Image (cartoon, rainbow, N blue to C red; front, side, top):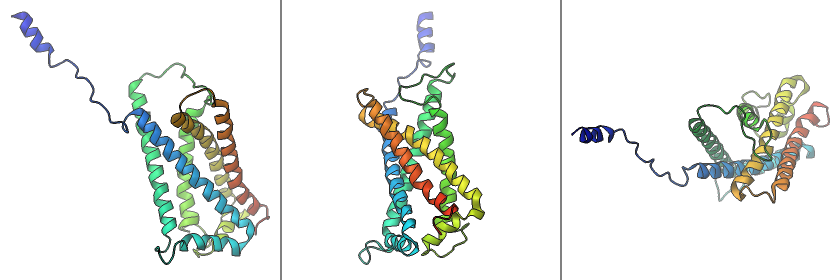
Length: 245
């Protein structure tokens, strides 16, 4: 009798096996989604950087390039179709990147609620990569908000004419607005560190953690980060020092 009572009492407290998680909700699926969204953002960043370099061709060429983006596909496509596709794609990529990062961080915390005395470092990973990716991500998000207010919506930019992209860029980095230039450059440094680790991590996630291509992947990630940072930084520095007027 007592044995039967004990078995009845113990049954409800028995742990049920965890429900199977779908492939895109698993940690591997989330890491793949995070890597793919990161790659899409890198491609957008490279295209944006190349567009910014039109400023060295002069006002007319820069404004013609910006107008071409707005009128791409007309009259078959509505005005600014290309820009809206890029904007929606970028917002979706950012949302997926942030969501997967948050979910993975929460899962990691719950899996190990007590912090390691010394966090194990993966091969090829910077000692401060964990902190750099998160703090750098916050700085980048703040910069994106400012960038939209400044050069997209012109809320804080002296040049309100949407068609004068050249004038807006020059006004943004005018020497009298040096705090904006400093913030821009600091955000680029954060972006560089984020890209270096992010590109390496994305390749590791998509291609696998093989050791054969590790050094080449690290070199490629560093090269991508340097090219993007220099490509963006050359514009504000050229305006500040009078090379572009």
